[in-house]
Amino acid sequence: MRGQSVKPARGSSARPHGGQGSLRIIGGEWRSRRFAFPNGPGLRPTPDRVRETLFNWLAPHLEGARVLDAYTGSGALFLEALSRGAAQALALDTNGEALAALRSHLDTLGCNRGQVVQGDVLRYLENQPAQPFDLVFLDPPFHQNLLLASCERLEARGWLAEHAWIYSESETPPSGLGLPGNWRLHREKKAGHVHYALWQRG
View 1 (cartoon, rainbow, N blue to C red):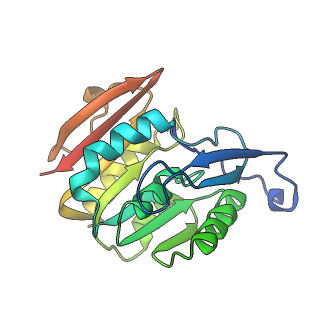
View 2 (tube, rainbow, N blue to C red):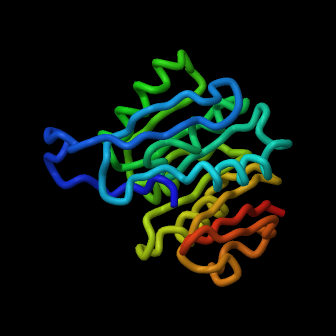
């Protein structure tokens, strides 16, 4: 499971995060670069093995793509996409500490193609002016009914390019998610208890 964020309690930004996790960029311009991120409940990057599989699937579609990483958590997929040639990427999450670390990583890399925004994903997709993305990563916290709601807003509010790719991680098989009917399931696999899948908008 990828980095998943739990909204910090009020005033939590003033407290130390109590440790650090580590992620490694596995391909592209910044291959093998390592970065720390603050530990937190459920906050961990998608395993290298899963990321490698995903980005093999996406290899023909990344160069020049506009990418949205909703529920970015540690930012592992966000950084990987930029490393592999995405033209622009937007990371959304509620975890202020994790996002501060991610902004620092972009500064270290000298990358101005990534934007990091703190906020509730569903509210953002509902209220902000839509801009179509070519690729969207969706790995919300499990058991909170966020995946379907996010997909419905992406589709209904104009956030997806005509043939956009959407990556999902879920606690249930992709066939039972009830995602928009014009999305075609392209690939799927399972790692432990996590089902991950790549969809294409039709």
